[in-house]
Image (tube, rainbow, N blue to C red; front, top):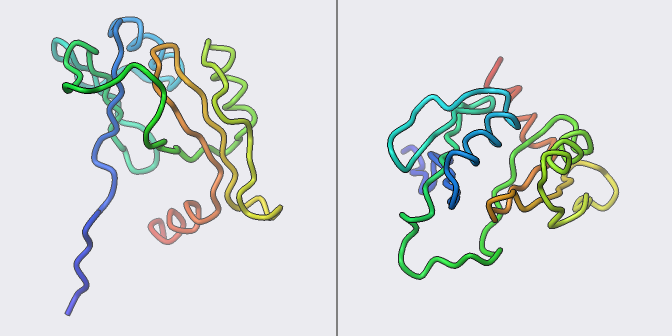
Length: 140
């Protein structure tokens, strides 16, 4: 019998922005692509090896009880050059949230950093050899 999987993969990561047009422009510059989907109050990018969705929602549509403070879960996106991507994010106006941190005991297999984008969202980046292993298996 095949084992059931509860969480099958990221379907969409959503950020909120009080200025949706500015956020769309900022993320287009960061990602090097235009959003593939736009409706009033929402824009969406497909990015990465698995074409994950990054949605930007007008902050007016945030659920009741949502706060404007930084906190909660951090989603980390794999990058090939951690320092280069961190430098790019900072040059575009993001603010350092967590500096480059090696969580692998010096083996450099699981290294992260995170920033707060100009719209108040935490954006995590990482290098992770496990991600590359899964990608290699997928492509064989």
